[in-house]
Image (cartoon, rainbow, N blue to C red; front, side):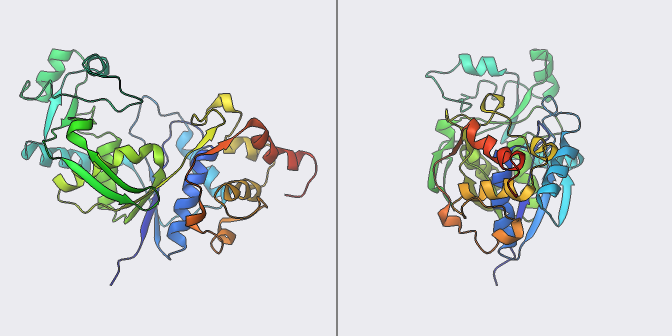
Length: 321
């Protein structure tokens, strides 16, 4: 018998919820509900330097306003014992070690330019420190835990949207970071531990995280866990192809709420970007019968300030929303 579908919504309180977040969450919600599955809500609040006060509650309010619901919820900062246990398990296997290198140190060690955040780490601190405290004393700052990759650490998988993927993690990333907290975890480890612990069967997220999947699959293997399926959705970007930011206009859900825009109009706009309808106002429940996931374009959804303003214009000009 096929196990029940379990999906999740996993926002981070690092800023206001925007159209790009909502589009990905909309796909995640529809994939779970269209299968009669279970949907979890997880607040990923481990990135403390970037977390914004009040952002977590605001994200929940925005999602509820749009019509999202879920069956269970949790907060990552309350799950630290699980991450500490995972680190202990990996240390016992000799797969994790403390590293005193800063990001600048890693950048300076590159033999060739690396785009974005895909930096290669050659294992400078392998066998260098006996304990976390030794690494901290040497660096004079918080060290990190790194996962020790080995030759042959190659991951192949088929993403349910992006198709076949392959990465030689040892050659591409080297020993990748897991946490800058002795008893905590960064995104790579925390997402693995939480998805496994809560029985998630499919992860729907933006395709900016597609490259994060192979190292996560290595962690699943090392921890003796079964990885879920993955469905990576193209991002919403500005016309310049860069992820949404203030320079592209105001895309915050809270702004539409404050302006009196109906949530159905926001959802209709995003549904059109997925190939579902003509942009007419709609609800998540109404989309259940119209969400052909194969119709989602494989290119990023690029929005101009004019397109963004179109959501506002219909309300301001008296057009029924």
